[in-house]
Image 1 (cartoon, rainbow, N blue to C red):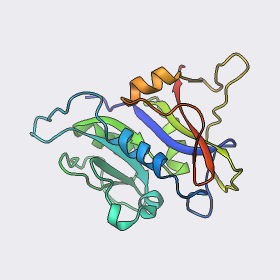
Image 2: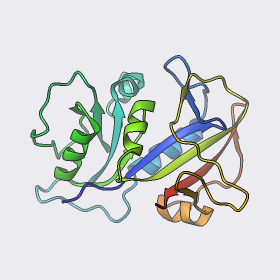
Image 3: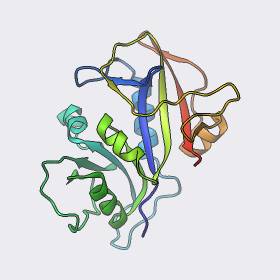
Image 4: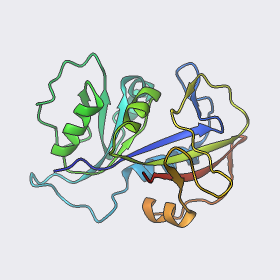
Length: 215
């Protein structure tokens, strides 16, 4: 069985800033966080069951620092299989994946995470950070999509950046083999009517975008 496509989901400034001093540069984006939760939980089709009888889930893949940044009462992220990558984890790639529950499953590399995805009953797999995990994912052919919340204002100071520039050129095409998809395509993929145009919460403006690899 092939692993599912990888979808990177990220909120980033115009300059692709995603963090400052180990945390998010912005606060109070409750509707944006609810969007993240809905999209990463929602199955693309009616729920199915694996051969072992367990309910299919989406997976969220993250680095240890991202895991540690989640308040303990919200660990693991509910309704999703949580896979945490840590170089200090001593597990073998031959370990059998846990196919029930939400985890966390701890692995020592993104390649090992893909091994677990092959063995588990996973519908969609989302990479949710941090920067090093995003960078490693973008090097894989399985990374086909970025769900971007583009933070428009104010100009937040960042010291951590998403390792891919996603900007449209004058004819509406992206660079680096990535293209911005339409609002209708975003709605169809996420399974909901995504708010269009600039949204504002707590003094921060942002908009939802979807980019796909075309090379």
